[in-house]
Length: 311
Image 1 (cartoon, helix red, strand yellow):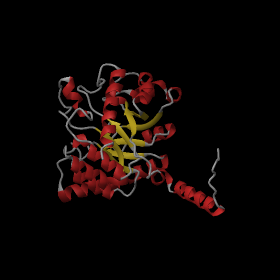
Image 2: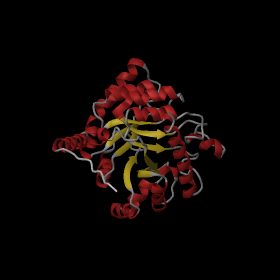
Image 3: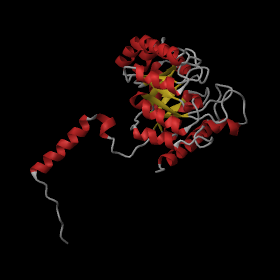
Image 4: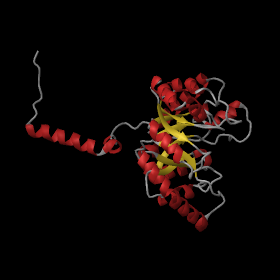
């Protein structure tokens, strides 16, 4: 049997090394642009209500997520659990389960009282802190643009602190705030001078129109700080039969996520995706047990994978 060995010249070798070096110099976002696009998942502790953190942590890997998003009361109470157990014990628990504390969600603090949470997040290596903008969702036109401009200006000291902590501030487009419309979300992103102040995009709070949502994702580009895989379904503001309440999850409602995922692929989105919903009342698990919650998350994740595979 003859073995054929491919011969490489010194020039070819150096060219190959140069290409590899260039790819590394581009950083992870650009260097992996040619790779198969995949969603990176973040698991919200609020999906599990007020279950103990020790019971939730094993579910992070089981859900296909790479990090945990810690919520406080009223949606969960894992942030309060950490305060009660102490940072050292929490760090040991995270290490035991090989889980990264990736995100802190603090709507309760609002955008201007985040300093202590930034310090906490930095200690644990968190990369994202989500909150709301406040303001009125009834503003429009020039009045809305002026309010957004002032909000961005007022946020600058907090953005600087977040940058120093290595954390991105994600402002969610909650329906009752000044980021209530696609135009408001777009204007906010355009006004923000830093990628450390971006949008935690929740399709739930926007018109359930795939083309509109996909275009918004493309317009946000690097200002997209977090993508919630969360649709309106039948809503979450009143008690519904469980099957109807679960329609907020991808694959259970009517929103076609394929165009949204195609847009994420187009902008080469490398941030986290959170499969999400709210139960009614708040603070209970979306299903009775941790295992059932994780199974529902995985079912939604499989649906998103199927959407992503569409040409």
